[in-house]
Image 1 (cartoon, rainbow, N blue to C red):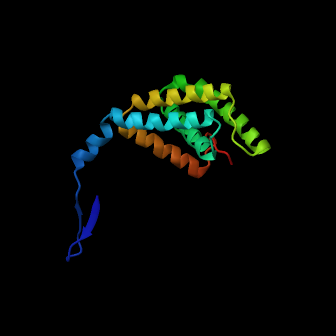
Image 2: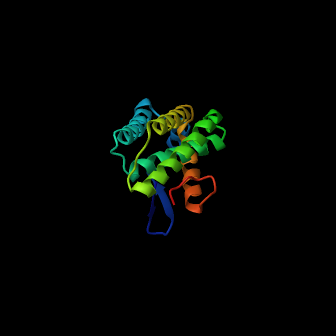
Image 3: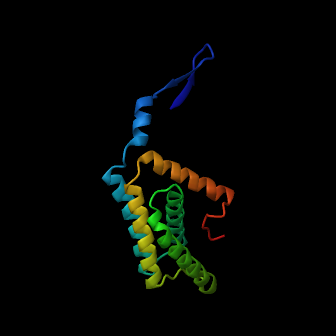
Length: 155
């Protein structure tokens, strides 16, 4: 949506399709979009498994954890609570090893926990419409900015 000014000072909106905006929020994401998100998460897990994981991969998985927790707080996939709690404990252990040794090292048991948590997030993404997922992402970002107690961070 772009605003433009005419000579008379009225603001006019162009390139706006209100029906298209409403429909884009209530549609389910396409399988291609969901598969791209899943591929990104699985490649992150694979990087951690192979020992080539960096802080970026860990941060990506933390973002997934925060999004899954936000979706659970919205009533979507409450079954994921145990996987979220287990993943949080795994991240605390990863953080301790990172501080001690200066590198990201993930144990096989922790990888299993992260895979389970990511599986729940994928299931949550697949059962909601795009608007709900966008709302959850916005809420998660707002919680990160404000330092909400439910947010999981390295800092």
